[in-house]
Length: 85
Image 1 (tube, helix red, strand yellow):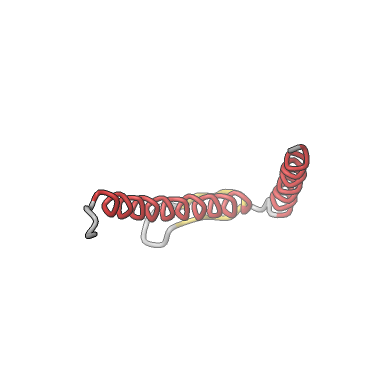
Image 2 (cartoon, one colour):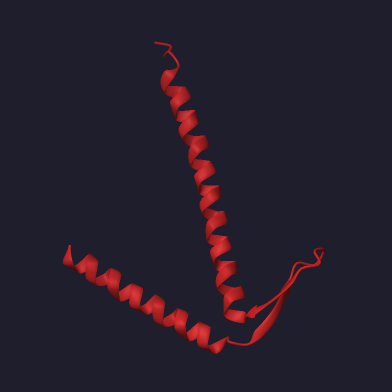
């Protein structure tokens, strides 16, 4: 169990270091806009990168969650059907 805890903290340190390097390397301010909308937001490039990654992770999680619900519903329906023995 100690090795898993050690690996977790090692990976966490690597991810944090990578995040800091990306943030420092991309400090320039960019204008972010969605084309048909009249809203323009100025923010650092690293914020745009990290927010887009976060949005992608959340959307992927929602798709996986919806797929799991569908699979569980089918399994529950199959479990409640009488068998044809």
